[in-house]
Length: 99
Image (tube, rainbow, N blue to C red):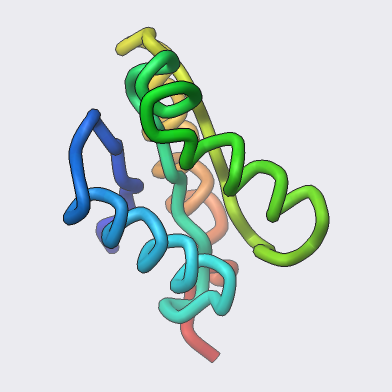
């Protein structure tokens, strides 16, 4: 079964729409699991369009649940996050089955 996550690169209105749509799906576990949300570009996602700090704060306050958030400028960290999630899904497929 294929599992991944989404890597958000600097974008505009369409990217913002995708971010909050993914956050909603993860919050409600629409597909039975929550997948990683990875933001590439620390300065962009914290200063130019501060979506990452907003989601982090909402998650910490319990307004959004089930979010797996990463902010990085390092492609190796992105690969590690995606491989870790994929490995977890393969080792525990029951955790990712729709009820």
